[in-house]
Image 1 (cartoon, rainbow, N blue to C red):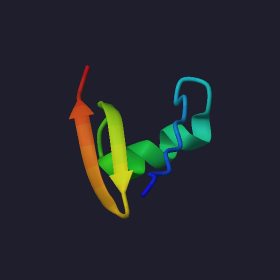
Image 2 (cartoon, one colour):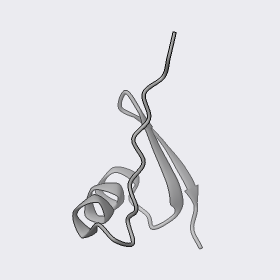
Image 3 (cartoon, rainbow, N blue to C red):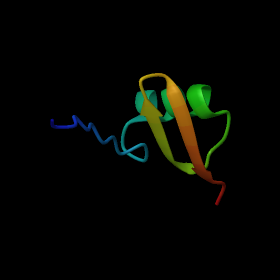
Length: 44
């Protein structure tokens, strides 16, 4: 069984950066969203 992955560069894509901030509540990266379960990275 395969896994689908989509990676976004939030430094180049302001809309995805805003989406990440809304989901995670922080600026830490990476942010991984697995079927609605959000795993946050560390704030740098």
